[in-house]
Image 1 (cartoon, rainbow, N blue to C red):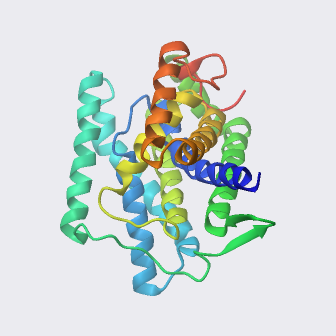
Image 2: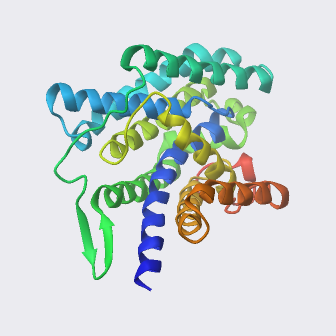
Length: 295
């Protein structure tokens, strides 16, 4: 029983990290309507920035997180304005190759600057655990999970209660009607892309005490993030959060009961089944990819 509880708690905590990465990707997809294949590289960049703050000034990744979030917001706005905005009216093929090209460019740029070495930070709390009987809970993973919940709630409140949030939802639902109502659609695209990038920047800071950073680290997480987005329902923040938790649980249970080498295969099988039988996602709120935020 204790082993089962340990597996479930570990899976939920890992799922919180997946959810945090996926919410940014989901926001960009739901509003800007583009699949950002470079999302994983945005995560990689944020982890390297946190690492540099740590080795240069000894700044803890949690303390440097607000700066990283701001830098990733600016970087996301820059990418959206220079690369994404000019191709928004082109075919899906052009959009895919543009973001894939950006992904490859950022990976190789990181290889040139930092080479392929694995790097990490060493903090006093990174191996700390909280013990509840026979169950051990990793402190850094618990913090990442708690932040994921806070971000999900903050996004909900932002999208529901602020003028900008309502404008983002309006553009996500019907961009032409939103434009006729006086909403500056291009400005909303820019802000949504920036917020999505800032969210992955926060995820990168929270991951630094847990994982190594290297030029292709984003690939490990972005594939899972795409699965989470499809499972949760494209454009749904609640779906991204619950999808992340589900994938974390499936990964943990499959890793113990089937094989650690097959845990990804298990959730990719679920991913294919969802695509076949419920393409709008398990937790979509009725409009699938046409919906963003919570009702």
